[in-house]
Image (cartoon, rainbow over all chains, first blue to last red):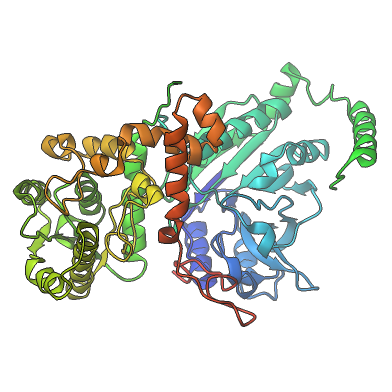
Length: 289
Length: 275
């Protein structure tokens, strides 16, 4: 089975949802003939929203004016979009939705909100508290948003929950210039995504955004890795692009025949040791859940 | 001393900085930019980046000589103007600042230098309106951190592509984009009075202080760790104190909070809000 994947690394307008929605629809048109189009983190709103967060919210349902045209478009092609979600209790989340056949298949709320250095997400968004794989017409998948995959457990949990396809979306400010042709931030993301593909014998597709917000640049550079950890697609740095790649999903069979890491994973042992460690931590110190 | 490598990939830096200028100028409805072109390295680099980002016809380079300014400064600026084909204007600040100096006769050299820097700033912002271009700043990370700037003078601008490059790195990028060799080779100077050089006035070289600042700021070394890395204690203390004492030049003026929502504290939007 094949999956024709399109990574739309786009520049967004800060807080102008209507303009961003239009761009989504234009890219969807441009990506005609593909099976799934992935947009970056907060693709409908822009990233450093600060006090704009409550003003750019959407609800992933057909009655929502932002989601209505996206759900309509999803009848022809599956979509992953990034947005600011307001729940029924008026909490705001940095979320991503998987849309297919006119339905909302899955919503992931960002679990790790970076609140250090240049990042201030914990001030403006509520923490998501679940990490779940979900079924798509191409197999079982999982979505993570940026800082979520800087932590090792979320990809691991998705893997154990059955995800063979890992979709990571980001709005990653470019930083760390050196002699290298890639910024530190780009190098880091590429290293870990390649590592997750290798460790989990999964497909990993990561999509970042482009453009600037004040002095911050977003480096683009989407990439896709196959279950052998090979890079099979790479978008350009710093410019908007639509990168299309065909995933041969049968590679999962071949990779896991060669390297049965999933078969041999000792989840019972992990659970026992994790329980022991967490119990010890609870007795000892600052048990943050 | 351990080797501290400040070298950068100039292709990446050039890409980010030209993109930055283009994005931040055009998203607010402008197509053009204005900058003071002193004949020195920082403004030369900025002019090259701006010309690449917006097209040379959309850049206005302003020369602001004072009667004591070095003739070399003027001519080195001309080299940049000729090489890039940017638009240029020369506004002599002598008739602007001399009456000011005459009115306040007890001004020392530093105060006069600050007045000159601010007079130049007035001409840039005036030409900004006339030329319909945003004012580009040219100060580098070293001088911003050390506070080696005139507040509301050269430190006043709409955007600055140079401000996260240490002087050492800026020199590398300037060379890569083709800034004339004579500008690369001469000692950095604010040219506010005859014989002034940055390194003479600061009391240390950019090569030294850039490495120290890199450890302190970028690598988050403590003073003790910098000394252990080979820097003299007195030098480390001098630089740390300079950075701290000049922080006021890097922040917005303070506003006293009274209400529930106050500009500068909890009215939080990027400047690019809505663009």
